[in-house]
Image 1 (cartoon, rainbow, N blue to C red):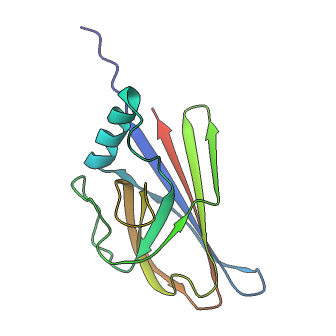
Image 2: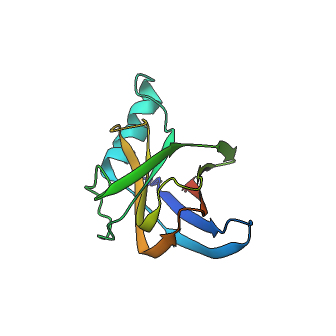
Image 3: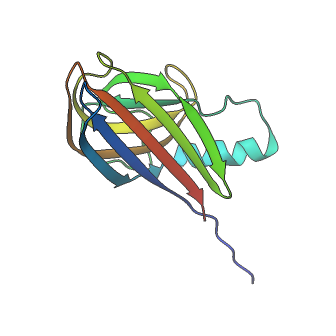
Length: 146
């Protein structure tokens, strides 16, 4: 029997910049494509009645991600993608949180297909990223089909 499993893997890059543009912090973190995200991908192969992925949300709870997650634990801000790039089998989503947006201690992020609620595709949690009111936070999220 021939077996060719398809896997979805991802990396999240977080860049926190200060008011004059200097980089205060950079991180690269693995993510988890959650069960509802995998179901979403399978459904898009046969139909296009579900909205495409469009936003990255951030939150303040560092509970480790699980495959059964459908929301962030403590979402504080969600912004639309500023760019989407496809490169062979990789989709790259970018969202930026301007000064005054998503201020606080950030510990989680997720990709969604709506400005509120919607289907979560992937989630990650991480140690504290301290976003001050004047900082810019940029998240670049790469999902690869292996």
